[in-house]
Length: 556
Image 1: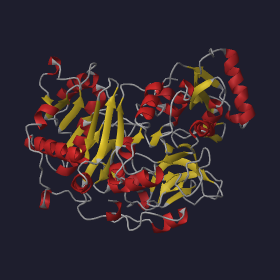
Image 2: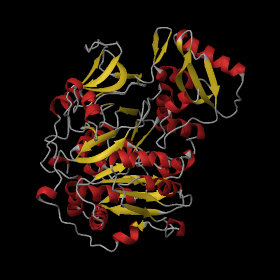
Image 3: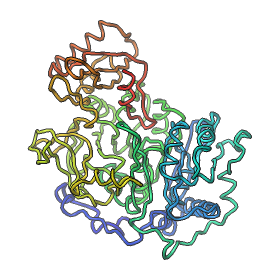
Image 4: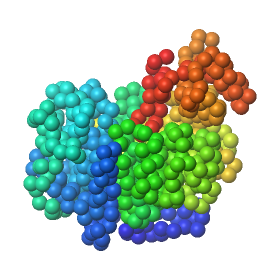
């Protein structure tokens, strides 16, 4: 399949990769027809998705299964009056119905908005009205939280005409969910063939396909718009960073509501012919994740550093991880401490990757060079990446600067903020996209993350990146995890605050707080030490494991 889109698939060196990697983009590319249906034609029994949950349920889907089920869903949605350019919001956790919906909507030329199960009614109202959502699809379970939030929100969402609920795996929709269409019952009324639209009904490369809502750390969430060529950009993500293997299971830890799901659970993996493993967990329990890594012999695995930290704390020695051939991490910077511990347990180097909802992988540790603990790696060939100072000049090695992308038309990069021309123009000012992240580059070409521009702490004239301080604090024997943020201070503008979760066997105290402060002073520049240390039982996180620093800042 890859040779359809890559003139070359193998490279002798990173320099060869950067110089000669290109993607052939056919006119009218459609992930649903050209990848899923094509695999179904070539090898109908080829495994595409292996799904399981917390209740010992398991389902296996071949590409032929997903092709036919997505055709049924496309016919069903078309019968509801949903068509090209219409927007459908899906809140489906890691339910297998998400893959069916994503493929179906792609075939139809409609737009999918993946949304997290953590949304409240207020969040839903904002998203549905901002994007003019025409239909919503969500899962049902014992808690029925998201369905209840939907029911509270939808009276304030005039554009939404249809609501669809996926039944619980154990059977039917509860009586309290009256007024919803049952996804499984409805699609089974329709044929499993769906003709490829032609003419004006066919999706063009530049048409909108996918909208991610950003986390909204500096204001209301923005609508990140990707077109129909976006999946092809994830070839680099899957083959050259995650190093997926055709026919071997890949698992990226992410709920479908986050961009990391698009990075690791559908687009690049399917193009490469790698089946996806989905553990539809109700909450993250380290032991349950490790049991499944062992049981299903996951070959390539990617998760946020926070999840690795909790798995290490829970104990990895009791499990057989010999099936894992490659290990990646993303979502948060990786501390050298975790890199070294995973190396000891798995005998694998962790390959960090960096990017955004607005992109595919931007910077990563690729196969041709050895990762340096704590480094993001080197730029991906799709993007002309530079580091610039406050005046827009390219930074020297060792100098901190903003990460920018000079080729704003790169395959995989977002096309703008949906329905917001002003914000789009600002994002691509001068034909350059500013990621809003700060980093520096060493003399070997490796990039090192410093922090989000919004997260940088300005203390007594110093600029302090939270990640560097977090890495030091996390290496203290008492600390399980921590988040470093800026705290307002009359004299210094801001001071460093550390919110700390302790390991088992340690108790919060003033003496322990002082010990952590002294530890940081010894390990890094004294001005970076946390003047405030707050102990907590857990840090607020997204379902994908990313720490919500804005929420920590907001609570003082």
